Image: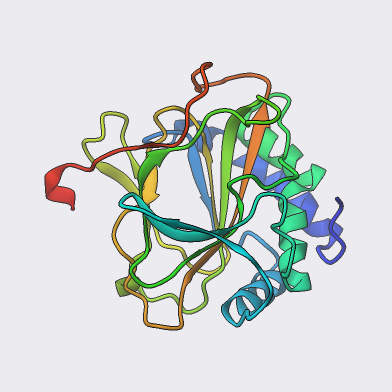
Amino acid sequence: MDSDQIPASWWDSLLERAHSLRDQYQEADPFPHVVLDDFLPEDVALSAAEALEGSRSTTRWHQFHSRQERKRATLPGRAMVGQEPVVQEVLRAVNDPRMVEALAVLSTTKDLEADPSYLGGGVHRIDPGGHLGIHADFNRHPSTKQFRRLNLLIYLNRDWHEDWGGDLELWDQPMERCVVKVSPVLNRAVLFSTTSTSWHGHPVPLQCPPGRSRLSVASYYYSPHPGGQRVRPHSTRFQTRPQGDR
């Protein structure tokens, strides 16, 4: 699973960055998280964004279309299929053992493991009008039964305009207020702990023009230890925002 085009120096700097951000991660409000700008090597991020923006590939999408969510995601076990080589490179990188090591250090998570099937992850695409309601993710992998512990989201959107929206929102545990908003600009990553109350999403319908989409690579990480998760399995849990925030 080692990545070929990402230099060893980048992996070394990622591990150093992970050590330096441990306290910031744990102390973040409303739950442990960190925003990482300039995450991937610049040339890799830019090439991946260009490839996804112009993609007319054979990628097959899982369509989510409901009151809670309207988006597309690559199929489990098929995230690589039909992708340009540079996008495959990014997908390999998020599952690379060196990535897992760095994220385990940053989050102080024991026995962290990647998910080679990219279940629920891979490439995400949200088109104009799309949205993702505030939610907490499913807590256990259906095959391995391990506990989902971390979410890593890497945004690949060039020249993103603030008025297009698409901000990732992090909400407090009682669902009373949005504490953090993160704009999905190019090469910005967000890492956060997955718990039964790590409420997040992008609930406001996307306002980007036709031909543009909100693009990201998502990767989820697991451990045999529950951390802040419930032990009993549950699916994605959507929440209703307070009336004044709609």
